[in-house]
Image (cartoon, rainbow, N blue to C red; front, side):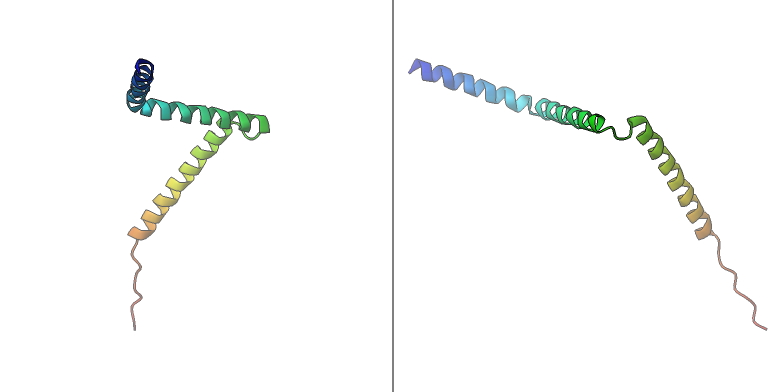
Length: 84
């Protein structure tokens, strides 16, 4: 009986620690998966991270310019032609 009690105590202790460390565990799993993803991408010899960052910056800059142009066009009011 004492051995089973010992096992249950250890199991309960692991569950308590698991509840506290659940957030840490999920973060660790996500980090492992991200690193594996990066390794696979590196092995496939796709674009580098620097190139992706540069392209993302260019796209965001173009999106900002488009938004500014839309704002300017929306501020302009159409003029009505005078009827004679």
